[in-house]
Amino acid sequence: MRILSLALWVLLSFSVAAEAPQKAAIASAHPMATAAGHKILSQGGNAFDAAIAVSSTLAVVEQQSSGIGGGAFWLLHRAKDGKNIMIDGREEAPAAAYADMYLDENGDVNRDLALYGPLAAAIPGEIAGFEHLAKYYGKLPLSVSLQPAIEAAEKGFPAYPRIIKTIERKAKVLKRYPASAAIYFPDGEVPKEGELIIQKDLAKTLKAVAKHGKAGFYEGKVAKKMVKAVQKHGGIWTLDDLKNYTVKEREPITTNYRGHQLVTAAPPSSGGIAIATILNILSAWDLTALKNDGNSPKRIHLITEAMRRAYRDRSIYLGDTDFVEVPIQLLTHPYYAAGLRAGINPTKAMPSELLPGINDNPKGEDTTHFSIIDTEGNLVSATLTVNTGLASGFIADGTGVLLNNEMDDFSAKPGEPNAFGLIGDDANKIEPGKRPLSSMSPTFVFSEDKVAVLGTPGGSRIITMVLLGLLDYFDGNDVHSWVNKPRYHHQYLPDKLYIEKGAFDAATIEALKAKGHEVVEHRGHWGNMHAVSWNKKTGEVDAASDPRTTTGSATVK
Image (cartoon, rainbow, N blue to C red; front, side):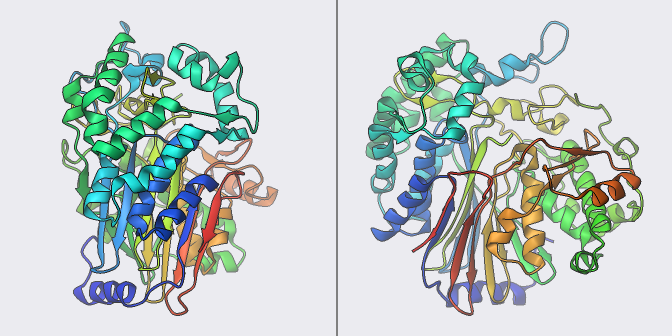
């Protein structure tokens, strides 16, 4: 699965490198971030420089979803040599972390400790990723690419409904910590729409990075302030934890589906393996024909059963490959998928409890994504996170850095669900220096005449949202259709088929129930997909942002 034939690889690499897009396209969650990326391109930067500008600006203006106190996966395609690589800036557990650190005296998970305050924070990786991108892939100095973010933090950005609602939801946690309250409750009140949110300390931290690179964050004054604040409020970070953090380059997961090559995220993301597994299972059926024949319930049923099996494997096998042996070649092999497919009844749902695996029944959309194509044909698909909305709620005094709560993405106890309802086993247990399993799934699709770049936030639903966007692409639809696609989701446990409000008509829902699915209609919508495409025959590029949120920005210049 992961090893393409030499002829196909040469064809695809040559096709992408031999032609160039007419314009650059960027789609992100906020117009200031999209504009920052285009500004850096206009100054002679490439897609990788623009990725730094977009990432760092989102870290200022969309802190409910990402930040320099969090981490990211940047999936890159370099046009000049066809190289695909994943930059792993995922957070990692501090050296003092241990498997049972969030269990109370009864052996139950203390969810407050796992989610709120500095004990919930893993060591951030985003800044290390910025330096790596600039040093090995970009054209411009890091200081240039960070300038739009510095200005946004220093001058402020207008508060908008999504961040206001997140501040309101998390008010009790944010008010625990003076530095957080000072930013998010100026004059003691939640910012009103249009009111500027100004972050002077964050601007100073970004300036330190612009001047000193990674060392400006992981060493020196900023590091000392962060560690002092963390330890004061019950956290376990040390200066050595910060100094020892390193970004990693990972070989992406590659797979083929209906004449297309997919390049997607590798562990510690679970997304690439899960997507490859699902597509391999589904390859035996002509899903487009089912859709065109009006047999949507059967198509949805088959896709749901494939989701169920991939998420079951996620819960058992997947973790940080630096710590556990993940059977990647097995899980992404067509023969393995054929075995999973053999257990699918085309007319009846299989209860998850009948699949071998973790059988404990467990009792958000707070990440961000952007996609870039530049005029050289370089590609970036990046998903960034601090985990839940406004993360741990803890800003380290004097730094402006909002710390993640990614420790909750580990399995705090086998079979116990995390904040997104995902369960895990020993492969994803807490260990010092280990990176928690993620669902982030930045993805490229290559064919002879087209290129697609897509991804989305959405917690446990990221994988299935990217999958549905891909299937819509394979059906022949354009980038605007992928991001608009109605969404549904099954994650093995709990054994329920979740759907967006209004995604299916009443007849389809009844047909799925008749097949044995417990259909749960969500009260609203989820996800925030941002995608770009390139027609290599015409040179035209296109970009689209999810209409489910009001701040998405997709532009072609």
